[in-house]
Image 1 (cartoon, helix red, strand yellow):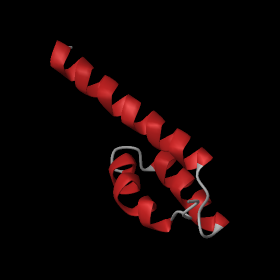
Image 2: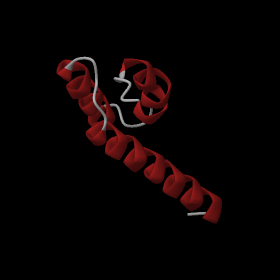
Image 3: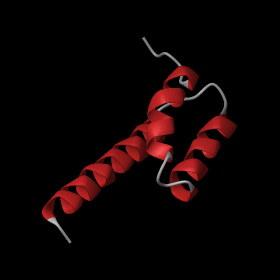
Amino acid sequence: MQLWMLALAALYGILWLWCLIDLIKSEFTDNSIKAFWLLLLVFLNPLAPFLYGHFARKQKLRTR
């Protein structure tokens, strides 16, 4: 495996882990939304972190 592919896989893994941690720590408008994102992150792995980063931000509760 080439070095750039390994670096790309590592960056993707970090992004996925960041999304999972953010999901666990965040409060959403509805608990079913949180469960939906968890299922998406686990089962729709290639696209889910990008979808989460774009759409989940609008579904979170503002705590400030």
